[in-house]
Every structure is written in structure tokens, then in C-alpha cells.
Length: 400
Image (cartoon, rainbow, N blue to C red; front, side, top):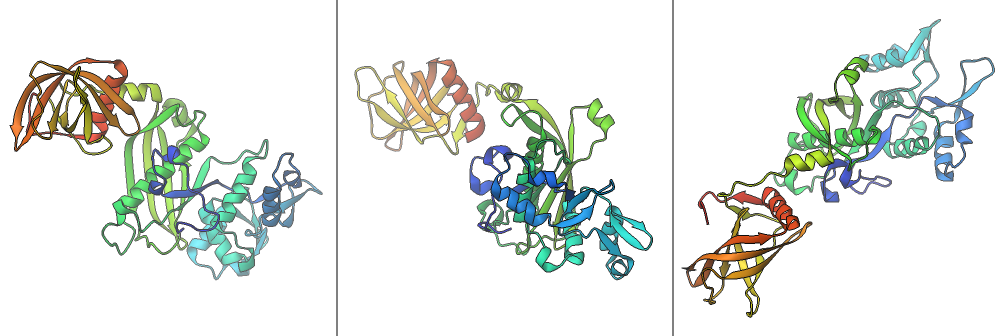
């Protein structure tokens, strides 16, 4: 799927642990759609008219139900009955898909699976349904959204996605590639698995996070950037495993042009956000100094009593101090104290009282080492988060 395809909708940034929409690489998250539905589904109360029309267009083939006289509405891409002569000339992979979902009886094959996984659905549709009956991934997305609102309809906990084939993505495509880079596909795996987990988890995003324990990837073929890629994610644990351990395990299968090009399994552990934040709130070593790399304003504001505020360029930070560089030769006395404010993007200001430890001339500018002597708890937490996320250790310096 190319960015901007009509009807496409990226997964929300928060679901895949991203801040910016351009970093989201999965779209049109959808569940499996059934091979047939009862007529009552179309009459479900509260069903939006646009969804009713989508279901009516997709389920337009009448077929007998399991009880005498019962009529069901079949999905137009899956023939209810296949003659043996239609099966014989098909490729072996397609015949395998038929055998997985159809039952042989008296020289015919009868559709038996209430749910056909999407990858098999696409293969069967491509070889057995008229072109006019085909469904696009956007169609499946709309149909799935309609079925999400049907009370009492229990569907497999499988999620399918369309990959956002963003060949303008700076991180993955700064260098031209003849195929989709593997590192990009690995990030797609992570995003798709996280999104599938949050789609079906009893706990909402924001209450829990996932910590990856293991990720195993089998690259089965090159992925081209100019054809759509479908991803299907499913839980592969047995009921016994689910009962015995909280560890989640998912399988992601990537398909392009009707063939599987990649499989990946991921094991991850859910963790409450409150615990997650506590575990991540690590106090930096007191003697370590850190150079800002992003999201920290390059200049802080320093204010001495009775003097105008000075802007100082932040050279490095620590849990206990700041080094700053001032233009010119301002009078800054060792031992004096100043109020300090520093903006961290996405967090807010860090405020503290600093004491001057030393000053030195640095090529016509004044370098000053400060020690933090007073700071509130909120600023302590913001400073730690800023150091952890937006700096790199200054290997040239020890203590201030």
C-alpha cells in the first residue's frame, strides 16, 4: 500500500509506541471476516448505513445453512461449492488452501471454514472468484469495522494489516534500496504485533506496555517496494501455555503477490505502565556528564539576584550539575547562586537553583560549571528523563 491510497488509515501512533505519524508503518488494521453471516447481521440495531451497505455488497450470495431451511449470506469471494475439475489445474499452494478450508464430498468441495485466514482468502479469491467479485484490503478494513459493531459476534483474535510502503522514510531509505530493507520489515513486525495485542487485550494501551523478550525472523524472499504487502498476526500459544505463563507469543506472516515472503515470531511480557516507569526511572551516575543530542533547548536561562537574566549555551548535564558557555565576559563569581530554567520538548521546564563551582575563559567566552543545590521533585524527574532519552555520555569529562 502506498501512502495516500484512498480509504487507507494508519494505526494510531500511540498504539505502536510512536510520536509522529510518518513513523507508523502499518495501516487498515482489521480482523478476519467470516465466510458467511446470517441475515440478522444486516438488521443489527445501531449499524451505520455505510457499514450496512458494505456488508450487503460483500455478502451477496445466498447459501444453505446447517439446519434445514436456514439461509445464510456467503462472502462473494469464496465459492460455496467447487467442482473437482476446477481444483485439478491449480497450483499446489492453491490446492493446499482449498484442502484447508473445503470439505471433499461426492466429487465436489464444500466450503467448511467459517473463518478463512486472510492470506488464504486472497489466494482463493485470486484463482476462484470473478475479478468483479474481488475485495481490496480497504474493502476488508471497512467490512471488519462493520462487523466489530455486531453484538455477540465472536471472531478469531487475528489482526491483519497493510504495510505502509514509505520509500521516502528518511531512516530506512536514506540510501536507495533495490528491495525493502530488512530492518524496516523488523520494525513493521514490532508495530503489527503491538497493535494486534492492544486490539484484543483486556487492558488498554496506557495501562500496560510490552517488553520484548525474543524476536525471531525468517526472511523467505525479497520484498519489493512497488507491490502491496499484507501482514497477518496471530496468537500461537496453546491454552496450556496461556494458563501457565503471562508471556505473549505472536506469529506475523508477510505476504506479497500471493506468496509468503517473511515469518516472524515474538515473545513479549506485558508490564503495568506504573511499574514500567519505575523501572525506567534510573538515576544517572553522579560523576557522569551528558551532552544533549535532541529535544533539549540549546540554551538555558540563568538569573542571579539583582541582575538581568543571561542565556547560556548548555554544554553538558549531570544529575547534579550543568556546564554552560556564556558569550563575552560576564561577571560570574564562584560561590554565587543563580536560578536556572531549561526547556525539554514534550516534558516542560526543569527549574533549579545552581551554585557556581568554577569559571574559565574558553576562546573569548566564559565557561561555567554549576552544581545543583536545590531542585523540586518534578524537575528531578524531568532532568533524569531528559538525560536518559535525549543525551549521550560525555566521555571527555569527569566531575564538574
